[in-house]
Amino acid sequence: MTFSLSPHKWLTKMRLEQVRWLIFEEKQAPSSIYLQIGFENLSHFSTAFKKYYGFNASSRRIPTE
Image (tube, rainbow, N blue to C red; front, side, top):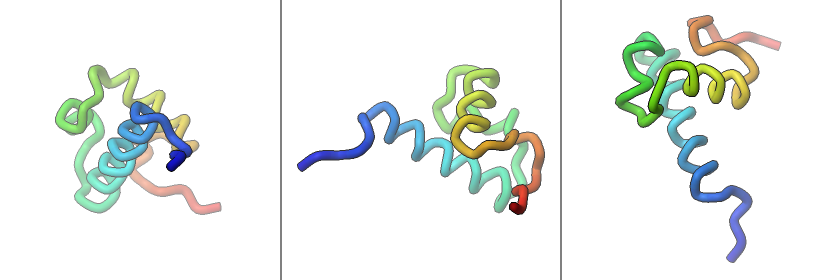
């Protein structure tokens, strides 16, 4: 069986999806949850979130296209 993501990328994807839910559904601040989800620092989290979703986690609103 072949997977499309490496274990590291899969884990990062799962973390980012959990963070997105916490930010936009549970209304938690990114700066208060990045450590509990498993990111080592806020800068790494912010960069990964922006790269994955295309907008900043701190925007607090999901952009519409």
